[in-house]
Length: 340
Image 1 (cartoon, rainbow, N blue to C red):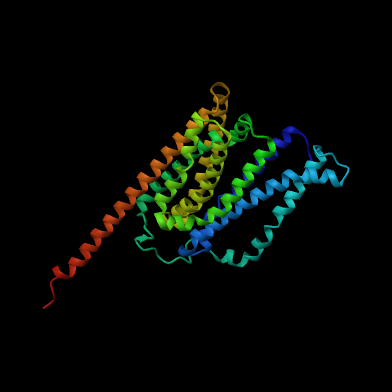
Image 2: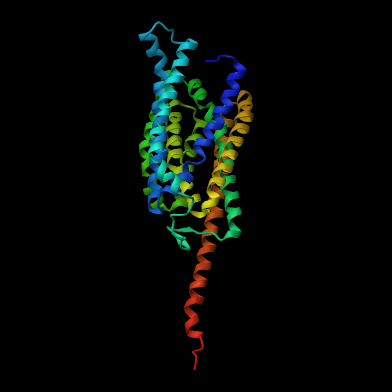
């Protein structure tokens, strides 16, 4: 395996592209393979398992070099040890091919929307938009993802360093992230209930904004306990909100537009993340981590305001149109002239 820095950068870029091919089709695939009643539960389970596997994988990857150095003559921090760690990760990832191959027949038969009955005007409180609104819905969905990525990119890449500056050791940081991931995997399974209890619009807004009070407090009180709670709440928020807003978008967008929507949103997310991390990283050097927290609060608030205002108004307009059509349909028999 190579150690040339330039080639490593090239292959890292290929790895990022491959990851996009994995994550972008996930939600459209779930939608095509499930009924409306199953989607929230299946999406929540998929994202929770993803969080759990990433947490476990991080723990295994962190401990594997040390374990390997204890049972072999390899040094813990050597290139050979890291090579074997990467190969072990590839072997674990290869296990995912087993369920994928087992579902091949059904996957080939399924096409977007072919097994789905025609939607009613409003499904579970979610308006079915007319064709003229599809592009607008898609644009808002992508814009919300882009705005959130600006906030996420301002805080995610630097939070472990922030924890270290306020007194956490490397081992404690790893433990904090692991606990947050495990809690998110478990609590994330409650997202279908949360969406049903509050409605998808209210649920997404409440969950996405949940970490904001902690980050506002960190501006004034940068202490470790508060930072730990902020990390845990943020991780849980991500794991609970993604299934809800992804399912919501899948319900309002036509089957043929879903993959395109998630592809555009993934691109907007990666672009926003890169720009925010580049700019905020430089600002942190001069002004400290408060810049990171304030940026996150601002863009997440703007994103949720856009999401809620646009889609709640769209739902209200659609319901008003449905009510008007129902009234006209009810009056038509009374006004009709019977044939003589």
